[in-house]
Image 1 (cartoon, rainbow, N blue to C red):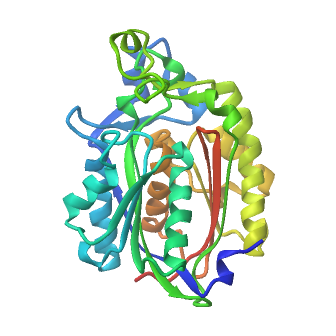
Image 2: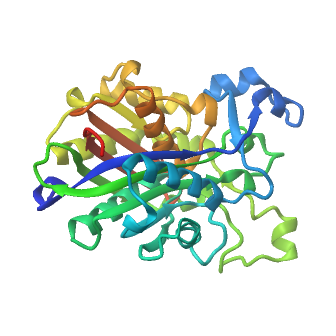
Length: 339
């Protein structure tokens, strides 16, 4: 089985960016409209507040903010990009892709652009896809963006989902480097089990159930989740995926300097860290402020960890996600010195 390090070119992070809506919705705010409480939400999820997009704000709007910041951090212009990929479960529309909308807004007309749909695992899937293009020589500089406006598809009367989700975007600028440069993406592991697709889904709006008065009346355009089964799946797969990604990188949990998990539930994060033998000091957690932002959660967390001075040259960073599909993905990075 090959690892990314066995290819002639490596893939390194050159810049990070973040885009967040201004509106903050706290647990106290939700108490006014749902049969829930701040204590109930905090103890079961770890969430205290989340960001919610304005009515006129689409996923691409947040993605553009994150993209511009990542480009500035890398010292690039939009014209430097060869490829732009957006991971999202809440695209602006079915087509054109949200990536094409972002490309037009940036003026990066020379760059290839497409979306990847893997729910909360989307960012790791997109990272893997773009890395493969860079390694194959099809691109030298690229942007990977995880962006969501989950508030647009959540039923705000359903406390089992409404309390969990938030909106946001995170972007990572990637560049080709010589293999052996001592930095970059060391390994990726992706997986899926479509038999669990019904556990987390948005039933209507596609070709199976096109939009109609009936699907709207039945609430089939809202996100649906079997929370208990997804929780059990997540606790198991987070560990399995992390172990495999580290094995492919030739590393162990003892080598990990920072663990950046998908921010779905603090109990899932704590359970996975315990299994890995990692102290919580080595785990980045920001779910309390943003909730579950799906494909945006890992790049937002990476951005904040960097801003907080938690990422140093040579650090081994472990990324792990799971999501609807069911899907999962893990990646191992060796942090570099930046641009």
